[in-house]
Length: 398
Picture 1 (cartoon, rainbow, N blue to C red):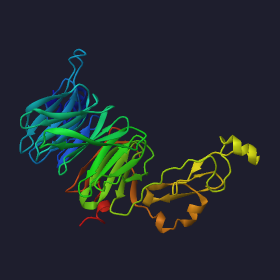
Picture 2 (picture 1 turned 135 degrees about the vertical axis):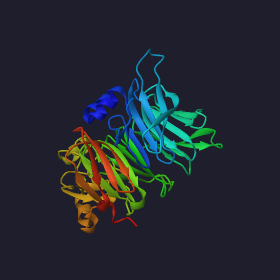
Picture 3 (picture 1 turned 90 degrees about the vertical axis):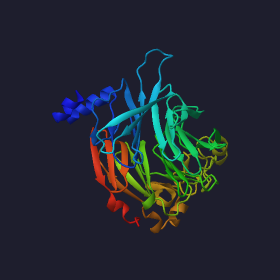
Picture 4 (picture 1 turned 30 degrees about the horizontal axis):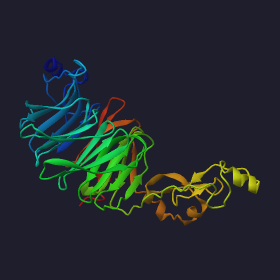
């Protein structure tokens, strides 16, 4: 049926047919990952159907290996397994050969990473597990259980650190130790108020980028080992995908708000100040509405508490009447600042450190092709768009 639809040029019907039956969509490039709602492909392989939907995809061009995570049908409660499947593509991309199945999880597979040098396969799932397999033997090497659904995955080949983002908003940092024989938990990164949706990794400066449903991007300085975290605020809805472009030192992010944002990461950024707590305004000392004692003593009505995004102090509305962008602190949108801090912000401090492009439609996934600086996006309007972003990147390209 796939071949008949392809010969007839019924591509939209074929895509729906493959999607319904769990077929594979494939994008050519260096390394590609995709989620269930947006598997991209200029090449379609007919006849390769699964009994469940494809929920994760990874392709490595070095050895033309394709891995897909699927969500199998429920046979019985004790017999439900989500397999990772390994395929190999021919040199002309006209043939795909099934190599091995990995019975790795008991829940939907949300993310896959394959490392060709180490011959490792990493996967995360809704069963709250991160699993680690050897692709040479198919043997399971280890695993890690999180406290919530495992959603996102990143891996650093040099230090052999694994990062697992979960639905609870935490990121588990793991390290492979003892000559690749076991996993050791290093720490847990907590900073998001929503579930982790995506992550990206800068191997040069060892920066971990995490995007969340709380509309923020956090930049974790793993290499600095001082717990430094930078915030990036530029989206008005859930973050869906991140990609770091090494040669341009820029981070690309997309979200449900329909914006494609490129962030300059070769600039000096500062940590966002923690919000201080107080029973009265730290500028004019008027009581806040819960401070009954001071309201009684001063014979004043209490006010609502606000916070200055620059100094972090608790202030009243009268002492924070101004707003300003502060790109160095990650605020590309105007945010509340106290009157004193507002006077110190210069025009140079307001210069944007990001580029925004409105696609007019929510974006569910993206994929970046380095050689030609092409960005493919999957939108909620059921369209796949291809963007040439070379001009956006060229100011940093060597």
